[in-house]
Image 1 (tube, rainbow, N blue to C red):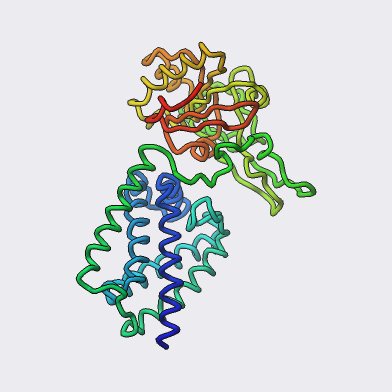
Image 2 (tube, helix red, strand yellow):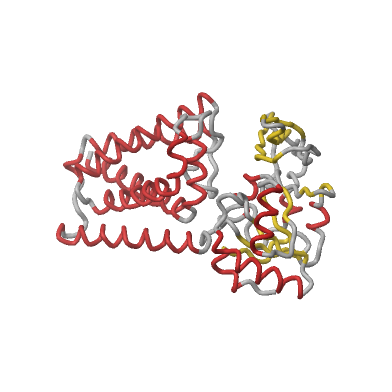
Length: 364
């Protein structure tokens, strides 16, 4: 039994550390996943959505440190109860998501290892079994360091986690597992593997027309309608394959300019998925960088999911010398974890990607 507990202890501890670190590398991405869980169609607790980022940080830091506590044998009773409560909660959550088909990816390992809802549930069942072994055999958990050093190890772990989290929030994730990582070619990522059949993706465009919300569904083209743009959501139908990048469409008054932008030699994209909540402190950097890029022959465009009213207000307030175009909000959130953020493209290949805080590091 001691050997079994030791094996379970190592497996659970390493998995918690790995899972926590992957999410800590991208806390903003995990907060988007929590917002999805908190939304009305899923758990119906929307009052928590404004606190999603804080909750995300606390969860992943505790998850990672809990793995360290288990490995070093710190406070076995507290660690055992914490592990059990956490895994019971997440097992319920993944079962709920899988059974009712509410969330298509639990976000357990971020974008590094996408799991289907049922895969996430089966993973949690295995973890629950291992944690129950640990919980009922705590007497076999022996510390690997002298107990007097444990509190300093845990303190250092917390400090290191928060320092790393602060770094990625003020810059960007250190490890980028998304299809929009530097070096990737967007047109290539929009293609399916040879022989694969494409799944159908439906776009639901929401507008406010004469004071009432109107939804228009199509295959991606921005609807020509007189009304205030609210947002757009995408849904996949069928079980066929879907390209890594399947919702990148740039729409303006002149229509779809996606191919035009992706074939240009030098492009600076300024991404601000939501102009209501965009960080205003970043727009002095936006203005300076956009003007410099234009002088050096770059095509400069803004990408947002917000309507013309917010676009015009921002352009006027900061005297911006470029136009905003419409793109799916989910796609923009995936492209860069900053609002605003910057990308440079060369014939559709991402050459640079920066948080607005690092605008001065963009080389033109």
